[in-house]
Image (cartoon, rainbow, N blue to C red; front, side, top):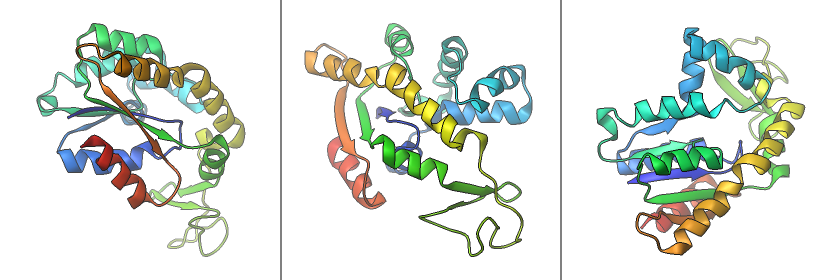
Length: 217
């Protein structure tokens, strides 16, 4: 099973990706995770990408495509893979198509901007442990403090309101056209065209999960 997950930042792609990869026993290929690992390791690629990520910008296509092409050649991708956060743009999608990377399904998770703003700007984390909270949906016992240590919680730079808004604008401008791209390709009936399904990303996680698996049947 070879799947692309589409949706705005904060739409819940990462959560649903975990369910999908476990169900089909395929690796999740998240360019975000690969980039963050490079940043943490301090590699040249990581240092180059960090400035884009901190400002909510998109990392250049050449960096992403090179990274992904190497990843899908690894042995664990022989029976399929799940792209989470890639492709982000039409040129990336075209590059993948031209490289002969076959895709079975494109799953679009649809969430309104207002809900995404609430989700993302309300997140807080405890850097030392990785514990996460949400000011509305999962608040700490004491406002702004970690439940276990009592230390201050922080808001990630890429989850500040102005940065989230910028990311949403970029999504609508650059990534949302992929919905039309893959939708048109799916409707064409062309050989090798993936199937395109749209899932409502609001509601209970289990309901969204069930709807995705029903569509993938």
